[in-house]
Length: 137
Image (cartoon, rainbow, N blue to C red; front, side, top):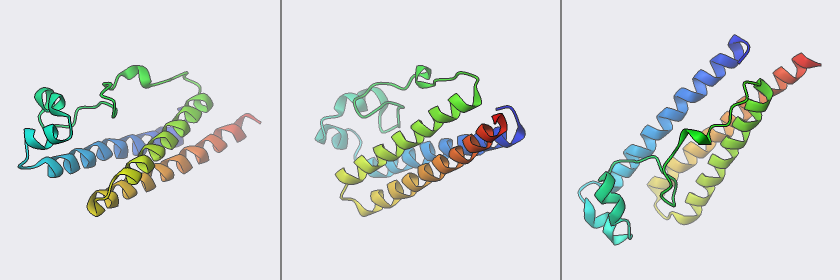
């Protein structure tokens, strides 16, 4: 980002996104505590347990591991912010899908919180995008 405003926003949101991983990891740990392999086998995910135990391995629901190739960077603040906006909406849509599948009120409360934060991030990225667009006019 070309100025401190953009750098600060990316630092704040990036830090919070790492906290989201911690929240999800804690939730998975609580859901599988004491169950071990049985809970994974019950849902047809024994292969996951063999490789990762009840740890959170960064992969999508289909099992595709996270890779840095997911990051699209152009070193252009406007292009990069549009990419960030899209990522926040994809995260929100994923949380919406989880809420459609889950009947656990405690899980749903956490997912709703995370979903709300993705909306806030989207709004903050939008504000920064508007700021940069107004600077070019």
